[in-house]
Length: 135
Image (cartoon, rainbow, N blue to C red):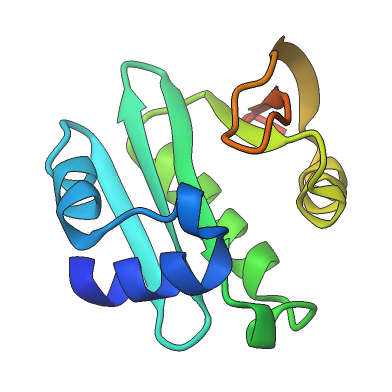
């Protein structure tokens, strides 16, 4: 995955205070167990696996590509990649204000297991979601 291309997609997908630069994305990709899937002009997902647990670090879909199945495809790819690397459970965080993302994750069977108060720069809470990959 090209970190500069991913950073451009991230910047187009998130508010400026939450956008990750190419250096940050490269650092994430260098983490043990990290992997990513990039769909040019649409979005990308970064995840990592440690032991039997996986975490989605970010999932970005640019506004012009939303509501076309890209989020579902990227999420399914992350789940498959995590399973292939031995993970049994997948975690992620999402803003409690991001209704579209919450609906996507609910449709995939994720459930809330925690909350981080005022986690995001806009003051929104982060919902910690979990899904078994054995389903």
